[in-house]
Image (cartoon, rainbow, N blue to C red; front, side):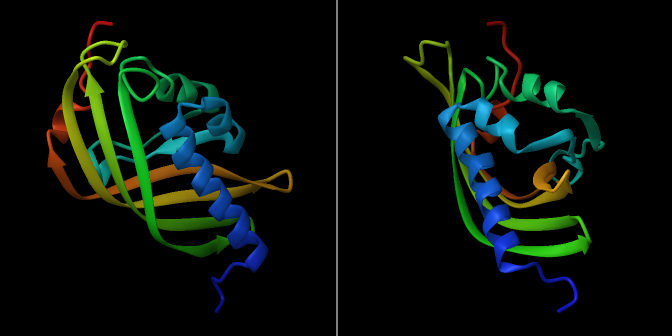
Length: 160
């Protein structure tokens, strides 16, 4: 088919997807930074009704590695189900991933007491671009399918 990717591209993009999920789960943000393009687009329009924004990689890293979120008080584990990839241009691919993410938000950074738990089920779109001969993740768009438990209490701001 015209929009198919090569097997080598499949392996590379699957590895990037794994690194995206596991770097958050392990809080190893250097791994996340290594797979990102120079700018990253976050499109939460389907999941939260927010307008898409594009930011430099370093600004995205500050947002990701934030003590009030996944970089500190919130723990997560991503389960990636089925994935498919569609070529959208000679150097661009869109990935579609079934993702279930479990979250725990703690009251403090010591993580002795859980404040809220939540689970999100999404069809995650990832945007990949080949930059200087190397595939990079350049955007995400979660399509919220279902949230469970206290998902709305996971990403609230707190004063840490």
